[in-house]
Every structure is written in structure tokens, then in C-alpha cells.
Length: 439
Image (cartoon, rainbow, N blue to C red; front, side, top):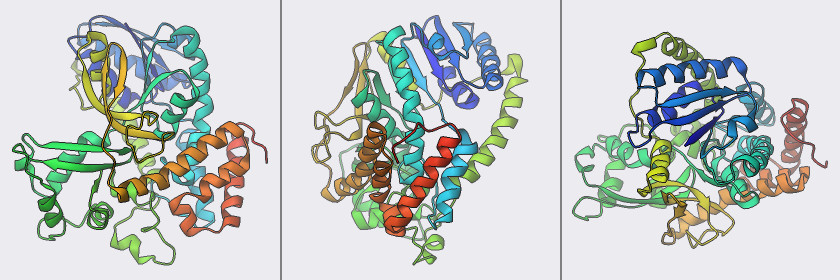
């Protein structure tokens, strides 16, 4: 069995996913290939994972490859964690140019103009991977951790033959986070819940205690009680109060997926809802410093380097596929078979998925509450138009995707949207991260 990790320069994340695999008893000896285009970061990851492997009985044979196709050869599982363009220059560009037009963002990696440009930078890389996969490992399962999740996974499933699934961290932490926030952790034991929608905007449709009692009435009451719930995560609390259902994604994400919270005409909303403008660039700078320090610490630990199995889905999916013991998780898949009946069939939706030795088996869900489906559709519009832009390679289609983005269209005129898209396109093209489009 062979695992290939693309974007292995993400050393700390690679440690989590691959360390989980090393700690999985059902996975006997296996090959592990690490790939990155940054030779220095690749070598750091190789050293760290090799040390961890040695400390856990050396069950993996590890190689580091700058050649992507060689890394992929004969892989059974591919973990994707690439970021095309990185924090510098591309993320900086995605925030700096829109800010000049008066468009504020928080994270910029899912939809919005930041998510659109990130997708269009990344899809050409995925297409090259798909070509390599078809030649050297056509049956591999592709575990995509890279954002924008719905756009990238949707592209792979709609336009390539890669056996892909999109993986995120939001669903498994949703209910525990909510119950901690509302001081309801005593009800976590045996709690039952249904969550589905689209990545970064899935809905807690139903939640019940171990005896089957509906917990939503108590959740809604407690969320409005200022003595119980602290004044944080205010956007999600407002959505719960207004739309009646709780979202999987954090307030800083959710604020830019909707037209209600970041508004130049209502600057007081930024403070009222504690919206962290420019959060992702700030987080990147802090994470880069933190990762450097953490990597130095990890790389010097030697025989003391250990790992505790994380809550990431990756190793559990690999284990289920290898052992043919089914495992159910939440992931992103095409809605072709109307997994969520009141969302478009072309959409990439986030639903329960079971994996076994035959691959991925997405589950059919009930229709979403109509207001939740309607909100999802506003984001799906942007996702599908971005995928269309990648196919046509026409700038006008990038502009259409941006013009239909809920936050962008609420803030900017059409002329400014067009100018902003053109400026972003030329900057990323000149930086070498975008293919040529018809202007």
C-alpha cells in the first residue's frame, strides 16, 4: 500500500495526517511518498516524518520527491494539501487589490473574490495531477484538503476521472463546540445529529439527546441568554436566530459568505458582530511564525518526538478502504444523484459518506429547510460560475462569478467588480500563477 502526500511542505499538517497513519494498527508496512516544489520544506518534512516513523517501529518506507509524477506512481491514496501561490504573493494580492476597491474580506478562501481567484490558480495544478494519476495510479483515492473545497473537489469530480472526496474539519467539531459554548456538555453523551449542506456552509438540521428528545428549543433559548452564551461567534448566533438553524463554519468565515455583515453603509456591524477583517493574512503571518518555531522544536526532539492520533478523517478513510471495514464521515461529493434534493445536481455538497474497499458511497439526505437551501444556492452560484470560467478561459466569466457573489455584489458596482477582476487576473498572471484568459 502506498500513500502520496502532495504539498508535504505543510510540515505540521503532514505530521497530523501521516502520524495518524503510523498509529493505525490495521495499516501494516506501507510506502509513503512526500512531494513539494520547495526543496527545503520538503526536506524538513522528510526529516520529521522519518523520525516519527522510526520512533513508531519504522512501519513506513518514506521517500521525498520533487517530481510529482514519480511521487504519485503506484499510489493507492493521495492526500492533497497544496496552496498555489502561497501566502506571498497570492494571498496578499487577493486581499490588497479588493481592499483598494473598498471590498473587505475576512478569510477569502471559499467564495468571494479571494475564493474565486484561489480556485482559478489551483485548478490547472489539479488537472496536471489528474493527467499523472490517469497514467500512474488510476485507481487511487484522492483526499482533498485544499480550499476552496467545493470548487476544487467539484472540478475533479465533474471534469476528471479522479476518485476524489473533499475533507474539512468543520463538521466533526460543530456539535461539541456548540454545546461547550452553550454550557450543554452534559448532553454530549449519546447525542445524535444530522448535518449536511455545502462545505463551510453545512447546517445542523437536527440534533437530539440519547433518548431522542429534540435539543433545538433549548439551544435557541440558551444562545440568546447573555448569562449563558459569551459575546463571541456572533454571526453564527444571528444566523441561528434568524434562519432557525446552526451553521458548521465559524463567524469569521460566515460573515463573508452572506450580504448582511460586512457593509460599508453600516460600519458599526463590524464591531457589533466582532468581525475580524483581514483575518486570514494576519493568521498566515502568525501561523508562519508559529510553524517555524514548532518545526524547529519538532525537528530537534529526535527519539522524544511523539504523536497523538488527531480527529482528521484521513487515516480512518485509508484504514476503512484497506480493511474493507466501512467508515462513515462527512465529505464533499457531487450532487448528481440528488444527495440533497433541493440543491442543484451540478453542486458539490457536503454529506455523510461511507468508504470501504470499493471507494466512496455518499448518502442521500432529506431536503434542506428551504431557507437553508436558498442560502446555499447563493454560494453554489459562485462556485459553478467559477468552474465555468476555468473551462471557457474568458475573463467575463470570472467577472460574472464575482458579480453574483453575495458579499461582493452587495458592496461594489458592476464596473468596479469588472475592474477589480481584471486587475487581479493580470497580477496573478504576471506572478505566474494563472493561465491566460481571453480578455
